[in-house]
Length: 441
Image 1 (spheres, rainbow, N blue to C red):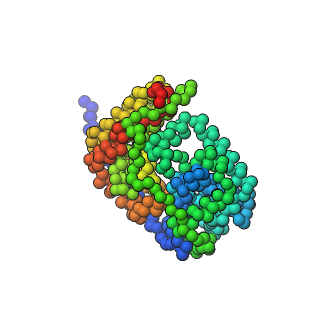
Image 2 (tube, rainbow, N blue to C red):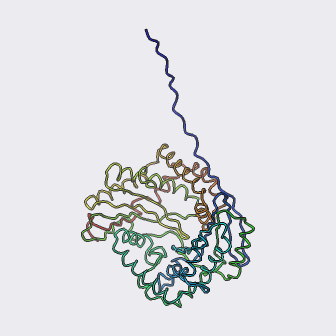
Image 3 (cartoon, rainbow, N blue to C red):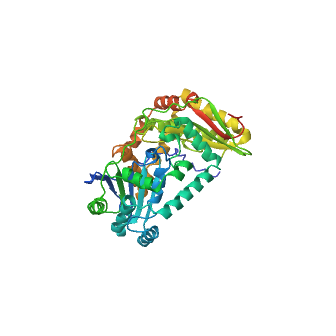
């Protein structure tokens, strides 16, 4: 009789704890002109990313000219007091560098991506762009025309219309977040060139702004280069008065339907007030949001509408951080014929979050996924700069990301339920639908 050898059955491996992020230590100082600097050394990649962050976003727009801040930022790289746009671009190309500017609601940013070997001239060019733009007439009119064309084209996309209407419904017309940060066609068309220069003079100032540098540099050498490039820049930023407290949507609990002729799909936005980014509740809110819709596939919204029903390619939800309390929203696009059903299923998932504690296994999956997403962010200068910009913008402590795993672990199902009741309760949210399948206003 043949001998049968025993096969040992080994227990399934038990996954260990998620890896902790290795966050480099910043060096901080304030220049004599008041500009705060956060320098984060990252050896190994011969690159430096600098982000100059100025409180000169759309919230600073003059009431009569919405879009001024965006137009100013766009024109920073279109000519300075010592070089034309073509000369600037040629010099940047020769250095293997890139400088660009952008705006959001709260901030304007000038970002420079430089090689370590060309840091000196790269920083000088960045400072020239940020502090000495010339707003040449021909380039101003060209950029104005391009911006107006882009705004007109944007209105042809239901998704854009849904986003803009959702913001208006949550914040109202008088809040800076109630309209797009890039302004309006009327504002961009009418703002005089002289007003652009005046806006820059009032808002692009060092005291009240900050600069984050990440990459392969010596902090002492960086400090000397920044002093040389930005030392003559003076003044204090004109402050923005934000509304106090969270917004109160006038049509909470209601449908807002924007019919779209011949629509094959409906764009759905279910939106409401969010959380203060500086609040201790932000992490509990992040866990709650991840469970509901932070992941297209594993979130409850995705598991329902995408995986189970097959109604959409993706559905997500997110909190939006701002200097004032931002919004929260869930968004998706579905075929017109299932619009009402999709809205109903989304509201049901939100109601379930607001009435039932999240089971332990879902809490565990959400926390693990969130913790695992952090370490890779600190692998590149761009990722490091991004995280330290967030920390500086919201006054978060330098050890925020190091403590992040432990802080997440401390979030309980009770915390998640409390935030869900505050932020996901359907009676506190507005349902915006651009398309069909829901009737009309």
